[in-house]
Image 1 (tube, rainbow, N blue to C red):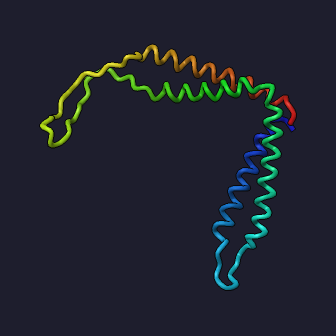
Image 2 (spheres, helix red, strand yellow):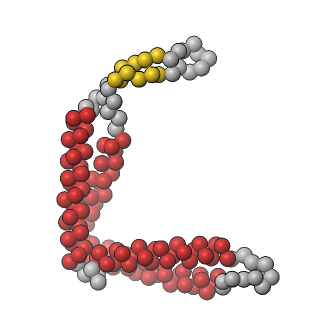
Image 3 (cartoon, rainbow, N blue to C red):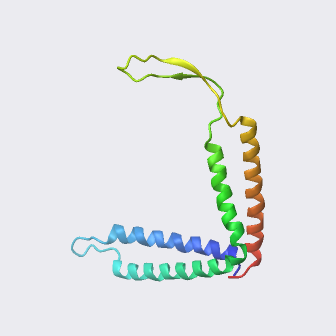
Length: 147
């Protein structure tokens, strides 16, 4: 199986684990003989799924050694994009409210961005291009590398 298929399988196993956990939590307590599920059996199933997930993640990690640099760069580029997107770049008049009881009134001030919209847009574009390029490399590697 290639890495892309292994990643899909990993997500399926993680989903099954979540379902089992939810079922165990919902059915662990019961009154009299109203028990719907045997949570001991469900816990055994959960442990088996968890072990399958661990084994698969280890195999994926070993297979990813050849693209580790790109994976780390991709994660950091995505973090950079998130950071850049959060920067305010408003230039104009804004209302500022004072703290009640301290004699301050509402007033208008002009705000400026030190990092201009043009510079920020360029950085956003560069970050997105890097992400796209790295993701293409990762996708190609995942499609052609066996786990």
